[in-house]
Image (cartoon, rainbow, N blue to C red):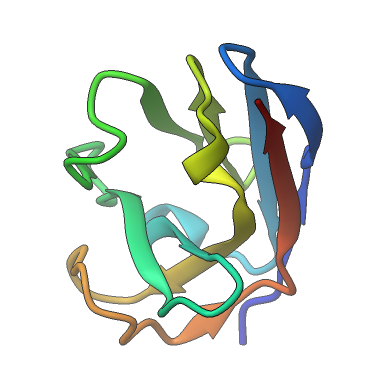
Length: 121
């Protein structure tokens, strides 16, 4: 069983930056593919970024070049650095984990409780 706890959300002006963190429990963190999804009110949950156990990264086109996902296996933590934020990035952001490869569909084994990111114009 893996528990995921997100932090770092908040209110920021357009063009600003935030860094989300996701602390994971469990001794096999390094073998998990990790990722971030987001969901805005009235919209479906969507893939944002993912990182494999080996460090390969994947991004949605809407965030490519602005967001960076990384992981620190020694700290059992995955990060999402978000730069040049836009109002359309406003959403609840969820940390996810699965035992196989990164996928863009919401078929992850474990989900965090979510952290709210609000970008004002």
